[in-house]
Length: 114
Image 1 (cartoon, rainbow, N blue to C red):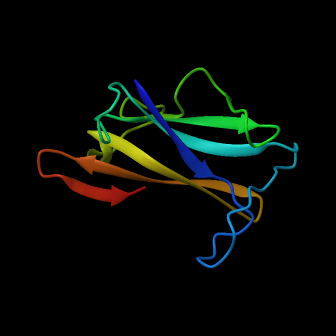
Image 2: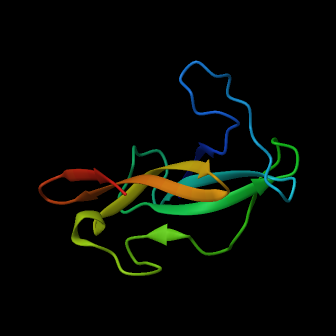
């Protein structure tokens, strides 16, 4: 399938700030990524999310072999996100990490942020 890396953990999220990667307390860089079963298709449903880390910001590796979020879990999946989960965005605030993501319910194509 296809993978889109890009929900990086930045020093600042201000619109006018340079995009500088921020190191964690473990001295690593983090990124969420979107993964899809099919290559070369735009946001091919259902979409999965994974977590990657890097020591240098260039070479990245998966933190877990399994996805961290998908329509199959882990955890309970609500109606509004049961058809596709995609477009993660990683934010850290006061030492807590948040994953903001898009999800959609079909066939109505209702999109929301989780």
